[in-house]
Length: 100
Image (cartoon, rainbow, N blue to C red; front, side, top):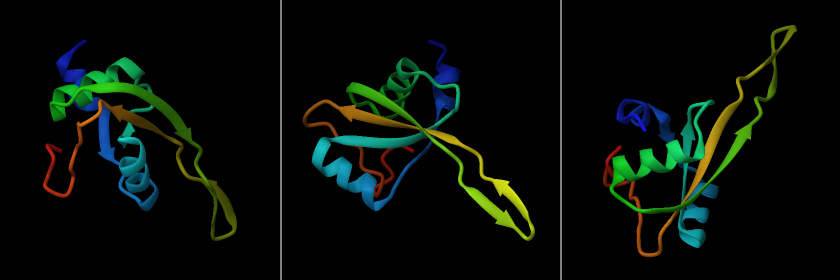
């Protein structure tokens, strides 16, 4: 895989109450990724950037919400997120600036 492509696959970590619950319980980290990213690309990008070993990757597409802008109805953009399951004993800490 192209290292330049791997550096662009991850857009941002998804930090929320649900994400921290999943991180504590299932040893998973959630990332926003490019809409055309694949599972092997996400796995390679996380291993390259954070120096951790990845067990598996699951992807989900979050549909954009319908919103009202004045009188007109609009729609937010859809985006893709990746649930990255780390090997036991591995962790990524974003509070200390875990490499991102």
